[in-house]
Image (cartoon, rainbow over all chains, first blue to last red; front, side, top):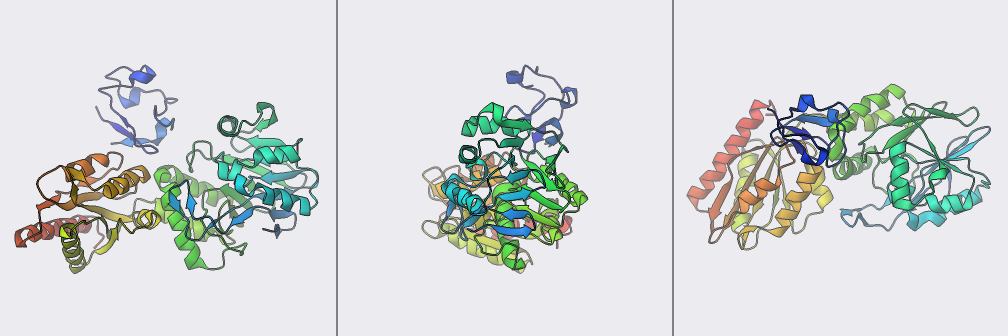
Length: 52
Length: 394
């Protein structure tokens, strides 16, 4: 599954790790994240992520 | 600074900071700066747009007093950072009936940063308007045009855009409007590099939004105003685009000359291949100049000696900054020297984890470069040329 990079702070969303801090389980693809999901580091909106 | 009229009823009331030479204890200000605040008088209401750095708060108050302003109905805050919002507490002391107009995120930040009472706010949404009587302020919420709460204010009837930090430049000048295009272009590019470049992807979309408003004047919060908005909008469209130039930025440090020999050879090798090169000796470099060079270069090659087991700390500093500023460079590499070992190039490459670059094979040499080592630099220069040709830059 593809990883995505936050275009604001550079945080990488890695589906194999999920986002434990946000309660997002390992194995969750980027597309499966809610549209209201935001970067756990800088709070940038989901639309500001690009394929890494 | 004395207040100045932009158009009848709209004034620049901020302060010029001729002496300031450092911002955020980080960014050099070779030409000083200004904190621009604006006063808009409608037939019924008066609005102040942004304030000034608290170091200059008395100048703002004295400008308003000299103008005979007895009442401010609204204080519009486009951005919560202290160099623009920091005089808000004093404005509220002098004008206790003023209502702060801003978006929800900015309200939260102002409460956190300045302890402004929550009941002082009127929260607006994107594209909401407030009438001042024959004059209308429209608010456009533009997150990540610097901070998450940034917004623009548009004075519809006079078509004046107040974008706060966006489109600004650090220049202290007595000219209200830009008078020298070249000086302003360089200062605005430097400002973009230092402040706006990390938000390139986000800002790119808003350049079109601003063009859609068709402003007659752009009045940023630092530096001169633009009577010809396309000057700065075209520049931003270029800087925020994905287009890179046939350029290599070459930040370097050398302690005993071994790395410098490589830098000199490599500089010539790039020039011989028709590639523009900008070497920066980090022990003498103004970081703003370095940031500006990275705005549109296709490639960055970092040259470092090995201190104990890793890169020189000045190289670490510059690499950390580059990783934060996230320029649109496509290729990166490391060259340098070592005496007995170490992991200088690996450490530098690892630090570039927030920049989307392809790393070209580093050239690390033991001691002073001999002919074989210099061939390695030729190979790197050839590879850069090939990559730039693939991008149709050469």
